[in-house]
Image 1 (cartoon, one colour):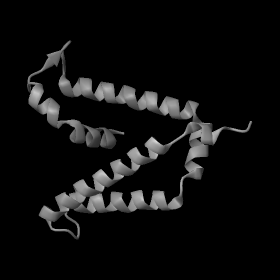
Image 2: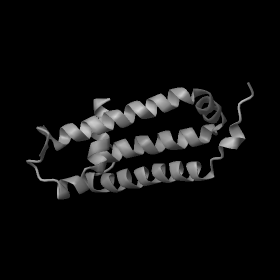
Image 3: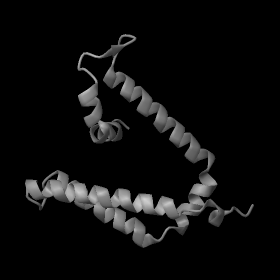
Length: 124
């Protein structure tokens, strides 16, 4: 979980770096401590909601086309390769990394935009 927390912090950390002073303390704790605490709470709530809605989650996951899963996996691999300059030169790697991330976010946004929970009514 620490790896994903670090990844999310790195992706979202540009604005706080500009607005939060490096010596920030609140109730004796640094900004990084508060950020880790809030992200952990968000993770736990998300996991709890997924567990609560596991029947809907399973119904949705098994109805998603395999090609969509494969597309996201390929884009994630290209993103990783671009970020770590594997196969791509470092300059172009950053471009491929950002384009892959944008495509993944676009796929997720489009899928969620078109998602209708009524299509996945459970037959109990």
